[in-house]
Image (tube, rainbow, N blue to C red; front, side, top):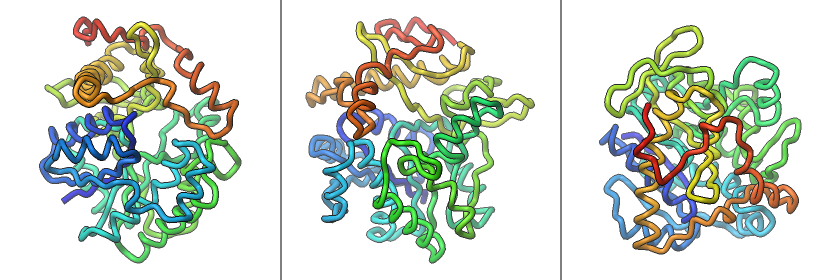
Length: 338
């Protein structure tokens, strides 16, 4: 059994449900431990009664120390703080031998068992996924700011060594976890750069299909589209199946438009991945708004506790458009071809 955990509130509920449904399409051998960060998302998911989802309310793991951090950090920063906490809670409170944290804006296109076969073959206690930024000046700038590894798919085995790495990460995040780039830390993420330096048993995932995202998408091309499954190749021509895609940084605009921020001008590539996802997200959103009154107002999305940074993220982040083909008309989703 593959054991995942994730966290989100009602603003990310559409993405969390899409994540779950994507796993159901490609696997019947998983559990998704879901930590709801507000009452509304908890009530809705409990009522939906998904067969492979175990739903937890945030109060189950919150300690006085965590609640103190909650008061001084932004919503996003607090979620980052809690990432290692929920992995730790899941391992301690459930009869499982490993747990993999996944971001709620991931979507699986193929069976994740492919990745776990690699992890088990490496006999890893911990697995981390590199950003795989492009090997150029801009890619090096991104890595300097964000770190080599991404908090998106993080495996921890319930072993003495695995727990040691996890507890160190948890303690670092409790001490400091802000949306501020510093030489050795940035949110919960740059701490991962220290894992292989400080600990044994830490494995870097090699499969390129685990961790395709906007920041590395321009390095790949579509080779085969077989139903819902996608095969891609890198610049060298090496082929691989797309296991999951990280739909990070999608921003909604006025007039039923959305900026997908794919960072590639390859229309076939971006639309093959993004259009089916946006169709599913739109369907889920309609149900959540109509039947449950969920609020998806864009101004709920603020990452930084810094007032100036928060203002810029709320009002201007969505308007940064690199390619016009990244602006999708939600009223014409069925008209896009790829």
